[in-house]
Structures are given as C-alpha cells and as structure tokens.
Image 1 (cartoon, rainbow, N blue to C red):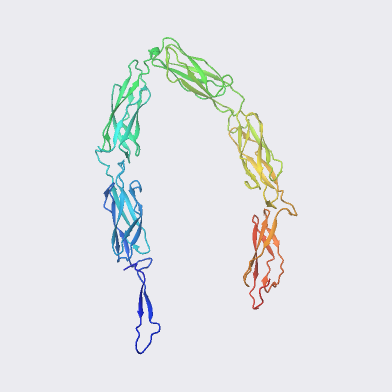
Image 2 (image 1 turned 45 degrees about the vertical axis):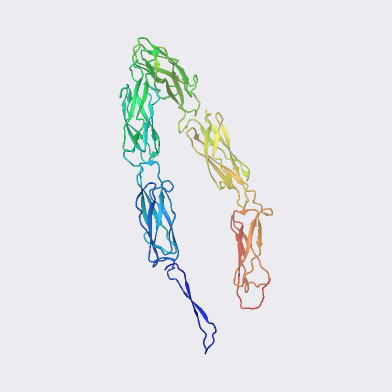
Length: 583
C-alpha cells in the first residue's frame, strides 16, 4: 500500500514476581518506503486515447494506476493541446482523481456544438502532469471531435442567397450581394454562377463565373463588369445571375437581376458623339502642354467647338496661359489642346499641375472630361550647385544652462517653400545630460537665415571642464551645402578651486567587528558628482595600535560619477587576552 505514511509499534513490558519495572514502554517506527518523491519503483499513472465523439458529446479518457493502490486519493493535473480550441470547441477538465484503493478513473471532457461548418474533425490532446505521490507512464492521449456539420447535401445547414443588383450605367459594374445564413464555414465557399437576360455576354457585360464567400464571413459581392457600346437607342438591358448548387451549402434565393441603363439615349445627343480628353505628357517650364481631345461614336459634318476650364496647383498667368477652346474639325476625330507654360526664377516650388476640364455642349456628349498636365520645376535639381546654398556659423560660447545659437544662412536666392535642414551632432559634450539636440532647422519661405538654438543643461558634475557641441548640416534635395559644420562651447561653471559651495565629503562610523575582521567606514559625497575620481587621504588615532591591532588604509577613492565609497581597515587577531574592547 502506497501513501499510508509511517506507522508505530509500541512494546510494553509486563511486571513479574522477581523483578520490578522501570521504563516499561518503548516505540518503534515503520517507515513507508513507498512514499518517495520520484516514486520510480511504485505507483505509475497512464492515460489512454478517448473514443472519437460527435460535437456536443463528452470525450472520455481512461486514466489507470499500476504498481499497487494508494491509501489516499491521487489527484492528477491535466493540460491540453490539439487542433480544437478550448472554450469554443471544448471545456477543459483540469484534474482527474483516482480514488483511494482504486486503479482507474475516467477523465471526461465536454465538447461543444458550434455553427461553424466545413471545419473538419479536430483533436483534443490531454497530457498528465507529474506529481509527488506517483510517476507517469503513458502521459499523453488524444481524443477526436467529429464535425457533424460536414454533410454533402447540407439541407439543414448553410444556405446561400443572392439579391438584385442596383441598376448602373453602361461601363459601371453590377454588384450582386451573395449572403450566407445558418452559420459560417471554416473554409471558403465557392459558388458557380450562370447568366441569362436581355443583355449580351461579351458585348454588354463580362461574366464573373464564380463568387467566393471567405472562411468565417457571411457575405460576398458578385461583381459583373458592363461595357459601354456604340449601339444607340437600344434601351435598358438585364443581366440575370443564377447560383449553382454545391456540396457544402444549399441554395435559398438562387436568382437575381441587374439592369444596365443605356447612357446613349439622351435627347440632346441622339447621334452619339462622345468627346474625351487625355492627360498631357509632363513638360519643363517654358514648353507647351499638349492634351489630346478625341471624338468617338462617329464624325461631325461641322466643326465641334469645345470650351475648356482650368484648375490645378499651377497659377494662370504666371505659370501658364489658358487656351479657352479646342476645335475638332469637321470630318476629323481628334484635335490638340496646346497650353503655353512660363519659365520663372522661383526655386523649390515643385512640380505643378494644370487640370483641363471640357464643358458639355449640344452636339456632343462628354466621356472623360478632365485631364492633367504637369509642369516640371527645372530648378529642382538634386545637386543644386548653381542654386540655393545653406551655411552654418559657430555659436558664441555660453555657460551651462544657456542656449547655444548657431546662425544658418541661405545664399543664391530664396525658396518658394520652407527649407527644412536636418542636423546631426558630435563633440565632447554628451547629448541628453549636457545638451538637448534640435534635430532640424527651418529657413522659412522667402527668408535667407534662421537660428539653430540648442538648449544646454546645468549639471551637478564638477571638474569636467569646458565641452563642445559640433553641429553638422545634412544635405537635401532642394539645396546644396556650403559650410556644413560649426562649433559651440559650453563653459563649465562648477570649476571653482575652493569648491566651498560644491562637493562635500563625509565619513560615517563603522560597525564594530571582531579581531581579524575589517572595519568598513562609509565615505559619501553630497552636492553632486565629479567627472574625475576624488582621492581622499585618511589619518588615524584611537586606543588601538596601528600595526599590531590594525593596518592603515591611507586613501579612499570615490570613483567618477559615484556618490560613495567604502574605507576598509583590516584588523589583526592577537594572542593578548582580556584586553577589553577599546573605545
């Protein structure tokens, strides 16, 4: 029997005629040799695989005990892994108990019925955890949860429906909403689609032959592209989309209609001429932007005059000159809209756009009515060697706590936009403790200089001396660098010789020790820290005798940046007795 604990045997002597009793009772203890922690020669716990079950049924793992029985219950913790998810697919049973005197128990794990279809079978892996009063044999076992929603006909499960699309003009996409009811699917559901209706596949629209509802989602959009044709007065046309049944879903509403509206049936343009404009090729300042204006749907027996309006980032008059009308000659199908641009002397204005917009007319309709042309800023070269130059000058030296001010100047002209110049730093001063970096200096649009102000800090570090901050400008795309590096000096205001109002050194009593142990005096520094080591000489007096009772440590050193040190004085063990503690 395991786990019964140690037991006692009490022997008691009986009195007799020819003797008397003294101590008549004594105890012996029988130790339970099976109560070892590793239990390698004792009780072994094993777990066996559970029989596979449907969702909603309990997995039952058999946990068995070999090597004997236990006088007390054996409680075995259990952990879980596997493809099933704790909480949604099953609920953990965290402990299985083999009752005292028994050799097995059932670990029952409840599983859940979900509304996720097509997820397939999932596993629950139960692993026993070792304990003090048993050892583990087979510690891991698997149970399988069968997916009861994976039927082929799926008549009581996932239902796919389709809804009518909103009517669109020729050239716009019909969008049918395909929805899923009855749950979600663990895998994508791919639904084939067939088409009928009065519209013609190919000329009026292009079939999308499959719609996919993604795993875990409940809807998707069936997008059917429609085409703009050159057939006039044909009337509105219909596209009828019909879903096809599948193995992993059933059909609800399987058919829906979308209408393509005939955009050429306007009263004012019965002969179908459409005017379009295309983007111009980008040009340098001073060159002409050329927009191609084209006519589709036929030709005209008379000139077609199309008014033009303008917007964009470029400014009419200073950057370009408007051409207010473009004319497509009788019998022709295109014309060029030429817009003159101007060369200016403003740097860094960047490329600018001219947006030309056609105006509708009585004898044509508009297709693409807006186009863009870009005027490239020819002064925005990367090296900019003949343009704007940025320089930096040394700052005047300042005391700790005052700002270093570097002058950053611009030569060669001005800029139409702010010039932002990154700055990096080196030098003997330390960023953060001695100063705070200003990482960018900005020369405002139209100005020729700016001040780079760098804040410095008053510290409590003594004896560090003056320190330098070296600011270096970083090159950019819209300027070049001249003098790129400048120096500012931070003067150390704490370097007084007498230091009467600065660093203070103190010593505290040592704790009493026995002969042979070291006396340890704490030497502390107040008022700040020092950038260099502080070496403090020490002299000694007292009733103890240097040499025989202790050995002098003549100097204590507080390291740079620290606020204390220990003065350790070695004491000696002598053979003189009863000399008493020396005060």
